[in-house]
Image 1 (cartoon, rainbow, N blue to C red):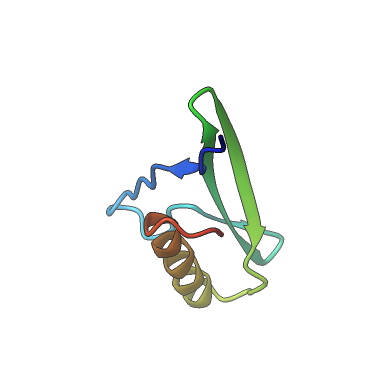
Image 2 (image 1 turned 90 degrees about the horizontal axis):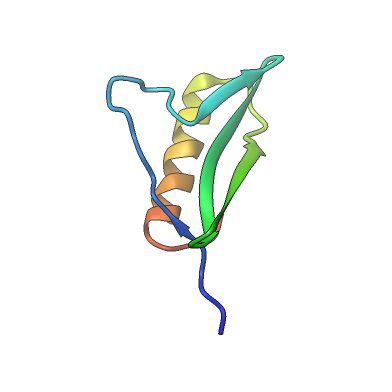
Length: 72
C-alpha cells in the first residue's frame, strides 16, 4: 500500500520571499515534503525567472497546488 507524500506548508507572513532564494540572478523555490512518516525530502525547483514579482507569483501557485494535495 502506497501513501501519498504529505506537505506542511509553513508561511511566514512577515517574509514575502519565504521559500524563495536567488541563485546568481535566477529565482528558485524550495520546500520539504514527507514521503513517509519517517522520511523527508527537500525539493528545489528553478522558477526560470530573474523577476522577483514573477517568482513570487509562481511560488504562490505552486504552494497552493501543494496545499490542495497536488503534485509539484
